[in-house]
Image 1: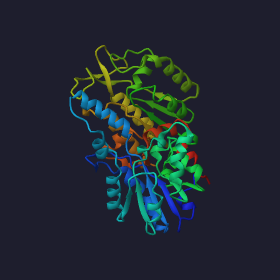
Image 2 (image 1 turned 30 degrees about the horizontal axis):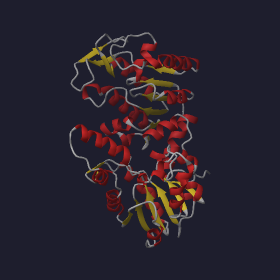
Image 3 (image 1 turned 60 degrees about the vertical axis):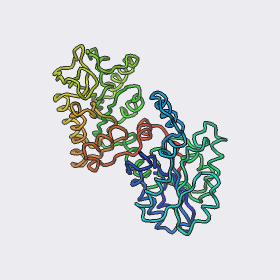
Length: 419
């Protein structure tokens, strides 16, 4: 396990903390505070230890990419585009600092840059909090070469004696503020959110309570190959749903109509099925379907009671026979990891399968199973159905949780001290 803020003395120390405040913004207003609230326990604990100061840093979006995309849209629509005005309304951390202040009940100062802020840090009152501007306003943050990153990392390291990383959502990024800074710090520890993520995700790929069921969905096999291979090592059952299921069904020789299929990954699907059989892992693919005549919330719904999908139909959700298989397997599980929906749950007509999975996982958790919802659309699903609080753990990192489940070493975690 990683060392956390509880394992080091913080009294009188200056602390610099990486948080993940990459939150949705509209007209300079925070739209979803989930990530801010997730960091509050660590922030409050640090402040309770009477530190000299606490400096917070985060990215917010990708300013250049966001601006480029918005500019292209404006040009297409024949509208004028002001890049600076766009960034000021979308990528500035000042509104986030103000929002944090309201939730923390304590003054949060704001620095207009990540560079050249040592005097401002030193002038903070005892126990003062400072939020730095968006780390991605500096090209050194995401630079590919170490020397460039170190320019920013060295500067950030002058703002604290202890580095705390509580930004699991960016732990898979080897950036100046997430990993490189640790080279120049004497103490590098995790926050409570980082600790919780590791605590729940690590056993799923190392030693999960058996039987363990992995539910992997989403659109494409190509994006989930590594996680499927990783989870096969410890899973008792592997539920494959969503658009990726049709590539597997086609690999088995079934007709899939006009469902989403990655033909170039047919052989990969066959290999994964063979590997599962060799390791005695039960693979559950859809045995019936809810189809639409197109990818639309208004698509005409057709129930297909068998494995084969007729021409002109697109698999959009699983049918009742498949749900019965899910029920039997999930409720018998001692541990469950879920990454990706089993249908197009954004469209109400095709949401039943994913909603049922969510409720089954919640029921299993209530009976003692350990459940981990691994980021991305799965999190959106449990939030949509208002049962996130019934899971053991809902990950805050989409890409980070996926890479963790793939068995990769995440740079933002690798630099932290262990115990």
